[in-house]
Image (cartoon, rainbow, N blue to C red; front, side):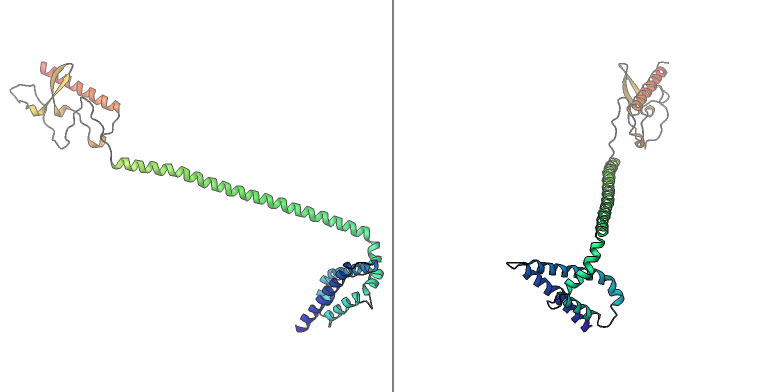
Length: 258
């Protein structure tokens, strides 16, 4: 492990850092010569090819003894002024092969760029479509929750108002001509004609009702009084009850006349 760490560090220093510094010094000279620029361009081309190839070769030949030490010596061989291995390898291997297959390489690179662009666009459209669908679903869910809350709020308020109304009911107004009788009173026998000798009717058992501009006495038992459970009748029912009372009073009047 220590040996591997040392060789990796030396490769970074002598394979990348030192050549990059020498290339910088060449570019910053007052008078840059073409051979020097060509040499460093050749070096970086070969280093790039080695970096691409070693991605696959490291899997198969990394077990070879002194593999990283050999790689370090190869980097030094490429840039050292005494050997100038980058010029030799470029002129003998790289330049003939690339010049021969340059149209094919250009076409492959253009096709690769087009495929990569189409793939990126397709992923972009799919992601945008999915995100828009998710946003719409979230908005629909939010609107549904808002609508449910808006619909449930009036119902709860209506239920509260109904409960309050049921807790304190307001008694209906007693219509004219209808007299209220206590439900605890027992049923008394019918009242005979006023002033008869058989069974005189006390004044407390008769109620004076004015019908057709005439004063008549109507027995309280003859008046229909709704109980407490039927206090919320409609106006039509109350009118009907009043007419019924009038009809009974007229019958009592006819009996008195006869």
